[in-house]
Image 1: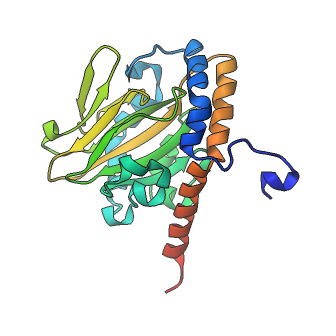
Image 2 (image 1 turned 180 degrees about the vertical axis):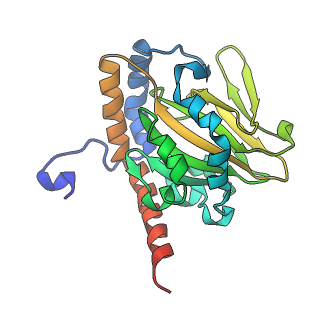
Image 3 (image 1 turned 30 degrees about the horizontal axis):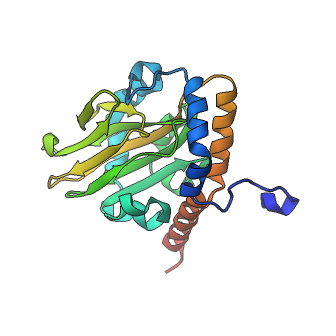
Length: 254
């Protein structure tokens, strides 16, 4: 049964990500930062998140599960998410989703059971995927959806030419240029403009996770409501529909 079947009107259920952001994001972000338990910084200290140490200590097991999945089996983000538009125009950016906005991809989790078991221990998880940046790929300068989420990268298979595979994050005080290094990780606020390059001959694999920013009081309630709206928005439903279609096609009898 759909929520609408009961006569409930779910806000923004048919709106795009752009419309949600335009309508609500500035006000929500101001409220969130007023009640945030973390400072407003581009790069967030990892000590705030105890689960990061667990992932870093197990990065090789996570890597083994990720690289067993052939690149050709991982859909490009642009194919499954029309709302990503300009930044996913380069089809060499691929995402193997394990979980997103409360929807778990059971067929994908089955191929990465150890990683999934670690994800189950992360509080306030929003999304998790293996993100592949193929050789030569470039993600244009952009920013994220809300200050209510933080983005985490764990490097699983980084090109040996580290200097030419990096992310630039425009913090309030300086530009952060970060190259991925196997087993290392970082957390950042993706509402700061960032841009990504892989100007090497090797593919880059990371575990990409988004979590809710730790907040207190009313900001926590607003965060949950906003993410509920995103879950039921066209942005997420289009991705879910595309992934469902791919899973059905993969399991269809020959």
